[in-house]
Length: 189
Ligand SMILES: Cc1cc2nc3c(=O)[nH]c(=O)nc-3n(C[C@H](O)[C@H](O)[C@H](O)COP(=O)(O)OP(=O)(O)OC[C@H]3O[C@@H](n4cnc5c(N)ncnc54)[C@H](O)[C@@H]3O)c2cc1C
Image 1 (cartoon, protein in one colour):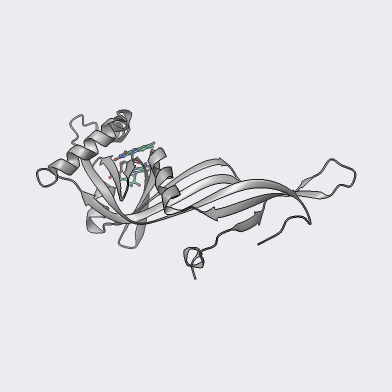
Image 2: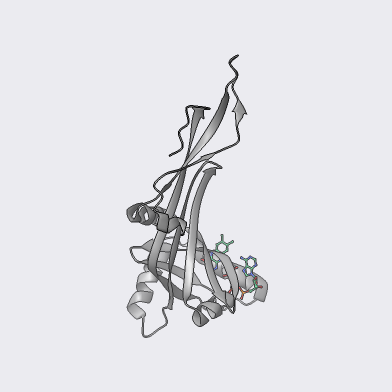
């Protein structure tokens, strides 16, 4: 049974114990409460984020690269250079994107969106491509990151970017919230 199947509402994990200053010297423990995020929360988190880790695989080998993206319901849009990741995603369109925000060890959010890769070439996808361009264009500097890295390695200034999107099939999200409690008072649900 997977974590997702179990529909765990609340998990409590004990962080490293630290000593209280008081004479009674009870052990204070940091409690980390991990909850599942709703679909709405996952979507809102992706909409507010911009950097994620794209996971793809081919021939029993996984490959993960950082990418910038724009989310809108059901889709993730990316401006991409052509290379290993696009070759692999063409061969195996089942991909995922992991996005997280880590405040500290016991306070973080992580969302995984799984879905299917779809390239947006001209002329079949002119409207979708323009839509992607307009969404991504609002965050102009992203272009520089994707293309700059490629130009640096290949020394080619004339690299044509491609647009792709991920049709999201499923999303899961976990959120950890750190709390503090004294030993004995902490109840593990
Ligand atoms: C903050 C950030 C944002 C980025 N945003 C984008 C984006 O929006 N779109 C985009 O296309 N690219 C983006 N990149 C670059 C991206 O992570 C890849 O490096 C790039 O897209 C090339 O991937 P590729 O599969 O085409 O590699 P190829 O050029 O085909 O090279 C393949 C080889 O290079 C290695 N390699 C490739 N990328 C990396 C990497 N990041 N780290 C270590 N080894 C690597 C692989 O292991 C493989 O051996 C971003 C990178 C960073 C750090």
